[in-house]
Image 1 (cartoon, helix red, strand yellow):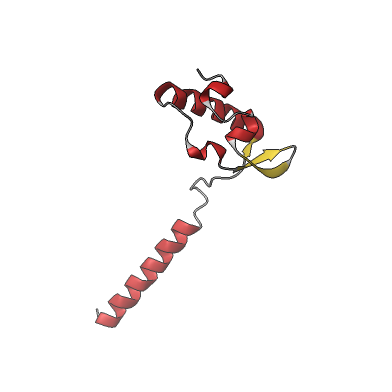
Image 2 (tube, one colour):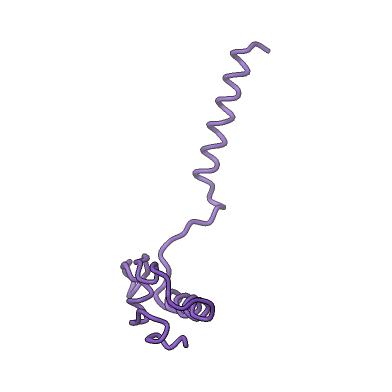
Length: 92
């Protein structure tokens, strides 16, 4: 094969591969979580963190997208559980 043909095939292969990776429907995408599941995740995360650390991490107050009453809203674990420390949350 000619050199130009090999280069063209390589470019086509790379483009097809990139498109498959970007638009693959079998790769799970992160999306908003239901507020009840988010609350459970926060409780589990908080308990495990407070068992090993002296305080909750900074991202405890970072907002995530959750679904509440059918609407997508931004909430943090601190917002959902209404506490900002291991002691206040009752993890100790």
